Image (cartoon, rainbow, N blue to C red; front, side):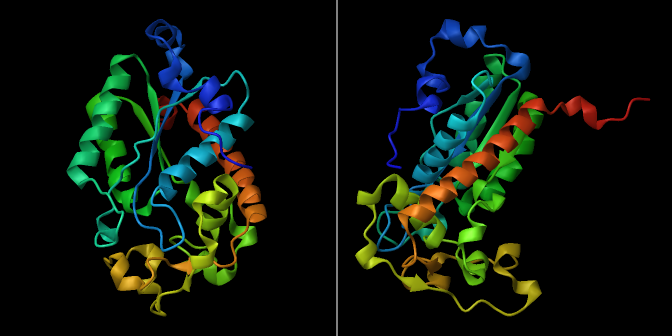
Length: 270
């Protein structure tokens, strides 16, 4: 499953920038959903490209759009390739935006979409360092523009769980089995498996200090010598292909649910 950028339904039919202004104007706005991926350029250990997060977002969305119905009124924007990656600064290749810069870029894109008449936006995130910021931005965009804003972090959908060990599911948060497998399946020549490490931080055995609860602030140098958290050595192309298909199916379910959702349905009629 080698990834071919700009090929497939996501790019040939549903890629927003390929449309002319007349085609954009003709899109029925009342049920249109616009997808904005937000990624990162940051270190992913000694074996993986610094483009990993943005690449994975493109790969999973490409798969999802292949599975969407042909008449789905859902449109894909180019990914914002840079994210807030300050926790990886000091590792070669990490390029980060400040929180204020990323927030301003996302808000400007949202305002532009609203000017074109769109009513629904989904922020698809593929980097953990963006999560809290984008959650906050969703509400700010709602207040500022009136857009209905949805959030989707594919990594939290469990699309890789059946192929991961219990330890990897708990602690494989960066450049481990899942990410390495997906990138191997998409761009095998970008992965250097001869350098793939295994490293799990010594996480506290306390429910109050669980890493995924974000109970304490950390940077990557607090967790790891190699720049990863997980086991990259067990990654395979076969697993990456299967994970991509499963994540694609979950993303389709989410996008169709967002598209069908009516914000006005939340209030009970008097």
